[in-house]
Length: 141
Image (cartoon, rainbow, N blue to C red; front, top):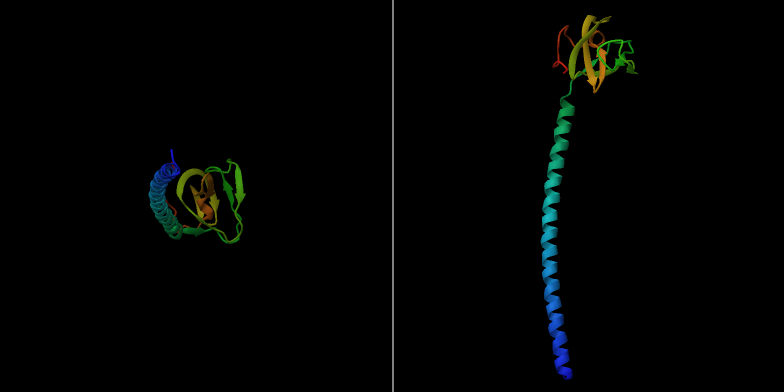
């Protein structure tokens, strides 16, 4: 085999390698384009979810706790349930659902309704100014 043939073989091999590398680059470019589209879709979905949460947060109605009272938050609808925390003066709370329970007297009358203000957290409706003696939210399950 002469020097020219050996060089020709190497050029052919190098050309085949370049063609393979070019195909690999084209495949990688297509994969990057697919990944970019997926990221754009995920970003759009995340943006929509954040917008929905912001809308929900903006639409949440809060009700004031009676002025001058620090109200105990309980694990269930009655004073026999464990204390979770005590609300500070001047606090307002959301009411996600309501549940009948122990009858309590407070500044807004006597009521057996308990307001769910967070997961597993209840306050007596007798201390929350809802503007009603009845249900103002769905019944808790």
